Length: 317
Image 1 (tube, rainbow, N blue to C red):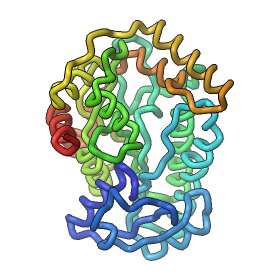
Image 2 (image 1 turned 90 degrees about the vertical axis):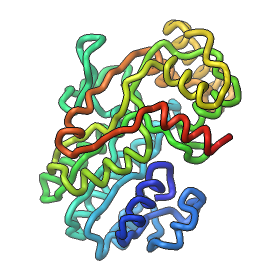
Image 3 (image 1 turned 60 degrees about the vertical axis):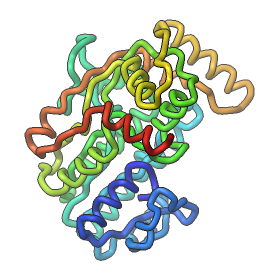
């Protein structure tokens, strides 16, 4: 609840008149919640400590599991497993023990399979294949989904949502905020050659609530807005901030080589790579997603990315 997506979801729930209990660490910053931190009940613990979850879920009817670790650094594989996979197992077990009415689990488009054809659309039914290029983050989110399905087999009512690349104001450490800050500072003179799906954080939070109300147990729902090239994403942000758009497109081979060099330097200096190899490989590919299911079954709508970029610019200028 103290993170990028969780804080927006918490605010929407409170504004809708819902009684909310948040689960957070004792070191969590409450900055993104602002005054809403005073309007919710607080349970303090850690996803990796099952007992703290058991206590937090007592008397709770509905659970949104939004917490996760996002990293593509090679040295974070174990942390990703402990937080994303094992942490989800703990949430599922606590939800079963507390006999909650429903769990909505936040996964990711990273947990989807990839199409056979280069231009094929990806949706909730695209089969996962554990190929060498899949990141440790993707594998951890895939394992987390399997834990949710294990809980469903044991009697849990649960729905899975898979957000695309989420944009919003957030805090300075937010994954996409780094992209925004690079653009508004004029550093983004070049863009990767690939593409992905982008979505507004407010629409992702609303999609969670729709999944809680209307989602089918055991079903996935892709929460994604527009399919865009990276050049288009960066250019749209640049236009919103009134700065120059990227002038160049980095060739895929150069981008992948840069990721390899960055990881090698990080290994020698024992620092985090500036460009993780998994990030470079992903940005060099174009992935296109189909959000038909969530629009048809849950009635979700998504803002144009141009509007999202303008809102971010107004908040940060």
